[in-house]
Length: 280
Ligand code: AMP
Image 1 (cartoon, rainbow, N blue to C red):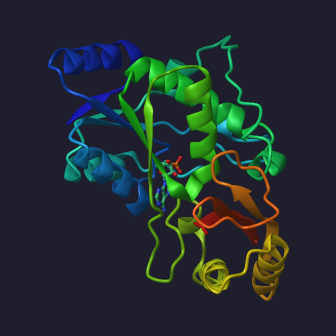
Image 2 (image 1 turned 90 degrees about the horizontal axis):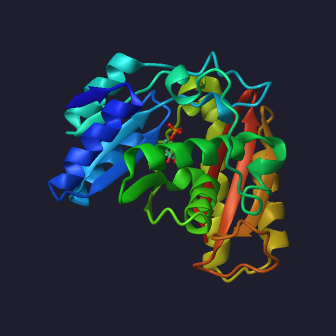
């Protein structure tokens, strides 16, 4: 496995890969790799492409009150996981390689990025679309593999790719959960045991939502009310949003359309922000 830290080296390698007639799959991550990331890598491997994992904690995605410096960094463990998963190359640039002094260009998507996490994290998706545009330009992959856990992020990136005509496929991989049903995530790893116990209410709410839709409920009001009620039973869990949206546009829906609508949840468990979602 090659470990690459600079843009020219990365471009050289991808040129070689393309010259051999191989396809390139990119798995963008912020590091601190966990089983959710591994599922993306495995899906990318299965596609038959040469797999490049980027590891870059992107400062632009963090708001002024969000702890970029405190974001977990586990470079040695990440490399071991990538080696084990037979990744072909890891691209792990320093912040200055991506945003040198005086950096001043940004990419924004102005529709799908507005609701949900766009309300409470107003600069977050600008950071996401900017780093994705840069990674797509540097690596020039055929496909990019993203997680369902961050479905709004995938929707925003897909829209940016379409609007700016990058010509890259977006493959969305189902959410990987732990034994209690909590979605794996860098932030959920930070939970204490008792916080983790509280957070299992998210899974309970998703299960209830599934049951209601399977039983024929189509009213978004009813589903949102029930999910909010279930989550509200835990003292240390506070709802940021519970919403039912169109899975492509992230627009709120009045009526549930099975196969098209998604239930979107964001909560605080004490000071840890968690998101989850369910295709209905
Ligand atoms: P991050 O490193 O948190 O930016 O995540 C990198 C990619 O991994 C994103 O596309 C995430 O959606 C995806 N991802 C994170 N957690 C999970 C999970 N539990 N299941 C599936 N994909 C995930």
